[in-house]
Amino acid sequence: MKTQKITVAGFGGQGVMTIGQILAYTGNEYDLNTLWYPSYGPETRGGTANCAVTISKEAINSPVFSEATTLIILNEPSLKKFIDKIENNGNLIYNSSLIVGKVLKDNINIYPIPANDIALELGNARVSNMVVLGAYLALNPSFEDKMLKVIEVMLGENKKDLLQLNITAIYTGKEYLEKIKHQ
Image (cartoon, rainbow, N blue to C red):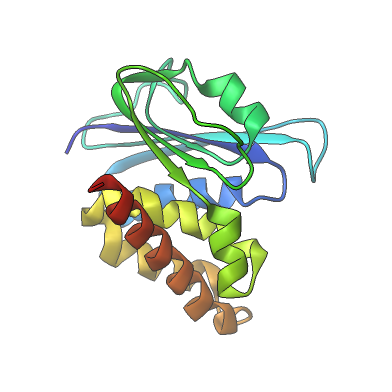
């Protein structure tokens, strides 16, 4: 497995940190070295939020990296901030519900996912983060089994009623990316 360097970014309250934690815990479940490094803007909700996640077979020497293998971007300001911090042939997954216009950048794979629109179709706008996480899963299918278990544990007994909705959102995002990838 190639080392995964993932940047997740958006507004506070969009589930940025949740995506990062799920990715890191999933890596741990596969006995890989993982590091989750959150960064918050001054506001709690509505301000900027991003996190860096590294998943590797090798030792991780630093929580910071200059170029991501994957960017998961949930809003326009985050796209502007991070678009130049992705390696050649890296993957950009972005929420096209909130980022208007076509994103153009050479030498990367670009996957627009209408995460908010899909989440609303599923009946709950709050699962848009799970939709983009599902898109990531489409590019990294080996993480699927343990990721679903991680989500179940993270939701716990108190939020067990939300498990099926979150899993549905993940699979819907995964299927959406698989469909556009083959167009």
